Image 1 (tube, rainbow, N blue to C red):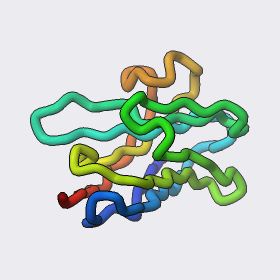
Image 2: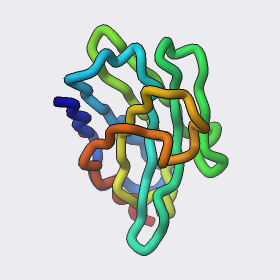
Image 3: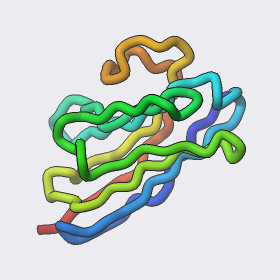
Length: 124
């Protein structure tokens, strides 16, 4: 049974930082592209970042590029999202996802497994 469990969300002031973690089980993590998406109330799910199985390729959404960094530790079956210079519009539920086939990194439909999400709230 595949499980993706996000942690590290919380309340932070604008300009602050948070580090999200996604612990994976039930799959061989190094064979999966891992991604982060976010969804605010009333909005569609938005691509944040993705990383290839070996970690050599990284992709970022335009709104977070330069401020967020995705990384992974396959030995620990964990993916991280370091978020710096957070903005109030970054308030959302952040989801971790895993893709077994490398389709377009930013397309949510290309991911096979999803976590339950962790809430990030950025106050102004």
